[in-house]
Amino acid sequence: MQTGSSGETRSVVGAADTRGKHRISAEFKRLEQEIRFLEEEIEQLEKMDNASAACKEMLINIETRPDPLLPE
Image (cartoon, rainbow, N blue to C red; front, side, top):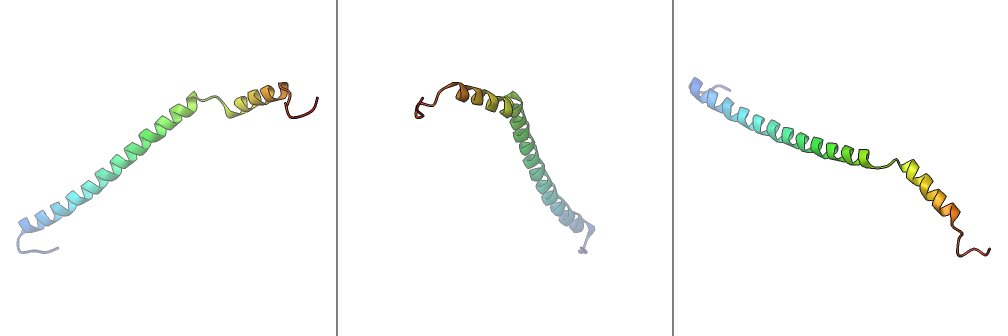
């Protein structure tokens, strides 16, 4: 971009650079927020029991109890 003086050129480039920095900063903050969310989700998953173990335990409980609707 050519203007009458070099000072004007710098101010135009500086303004464009500031908007670019703002967009980069906003994207960076969004990514940091997503990282925090995923880290929290991973922590929750690590605290949970394995689904297969929970299913096996439930099957054992169901199989040992007689079904009240079925005749004996």
